[in-house]
Image (tube, rainbow, N blue to C red; front, side):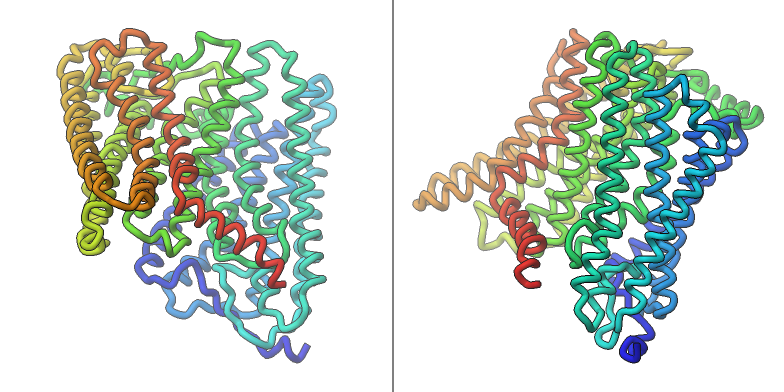
Length: 628
């Protein structure tokens, strides 16, 4: 007890020691915090002020939003204050208070998610008894049980930590007080306490996650015999909850299911359940839930606001009254569920693969070279591009209402255009990087300086934005009226132009010119670079040297062939749009499949990435056991 009093203040090392990065993080987290408050308050007010409050599902969602608000408010304000401070300190008492509050609210959220899963199970598997089982008293009892479970979990964890002696270093390698970083600072053997923490946190989370998986397996097993319309409604009500469960539980299990050790990556994974999950929860439950969207319209869309918006849009082409219906794959009703599961799997792999690639490159010093700097931006673009298209595609596969607003359609096209054009020139930049590395190895570090690499990336983004703004401007010049059926799953230019009431000749020529110019100029850079690379490599006397050079270029050539082949077919080949089914397949390929393939290509066919991942796994996860 005396030793423990030697440390009265802890120093939080935070996310980074770089001041520029800290300022950037401050702005980013400030925006996230404002969005979290606005989103969750929007959900709480909308539920409370509508009949949804009487439905158990939204009764629990109301408490989930309240928990997210409190949870993030325990972390983000202190994190933002520390980002502006040179010395990031927290007193022993405040550290223990933050530890208790975080785990209480985190446990409460886990148990509420479990209660929501039980509610969906009863609603789908026992619909005739739903009103009797999930009555108001039962719902209140579940919330009380969730609070009790969270309190017991947090109190027991704090009791294990409070009586630890802290007599040595006081630097916590994290941005908030958590149990594993504190166990690392304790000047006593923490092996037994570490096991108890695993049981109290990791195993409980794992058991609850298994229960959730089993409950949804029973739900899917039950709805297989339902009519198609009932299956669609059941999947629609469950998809948002499943997304939240995966987003929250995956990083929590990664951190707490293992032995009591800390990794530098823990701070990145902690961002998912302390900031990212509370940020996305309102979006997931509003954008993917028709009842929630209807409640938002009734509560917030008052008549004066609607009139003002209509006047604004009617100024030119009456687009305020325009809606688009994305047919997608509705002509194949028997494959809607398989397609949903397939695209959901692909999107999960895309997100994990591309964000994983960015994280691996970020945390590995040996990958801090121009080639992987460009690759990290390519992975970021693939993640953004897929996230612009795939969530709406998944939603349309499980709901009957496949409409998208005029604004939403234009925004989807604009953002997708930025990503595609930027990626086109980024692939050309990567080809030029390989040309310099192979043909001018002695001057490589001088030519491909950090400033020049940043200039190339900035130019790629600038051209992508310029193209998107130009094409969007000419698209907005077209006239649209009423409901328009788009024979695609995405607001692709040709499909949108096809339903216009005005002459689309100029808009079609503009996109043809931009697409052809972008393709020809980028392909010329790529082909010229690889011709010189091939000539240089063939002059190399060493077989091993030739193999190494071709190995570093093979993954990039594969990605280029797949990406540009699809784009050329879709936009630069005459009469390629004669079959809308062919257009849909090609669109699926470059909007959904290619963003998933890129991280696989660059990891499976790239020795440096594979070696880095292998070292990270063995060093961080397995060798720690030998050290302990």
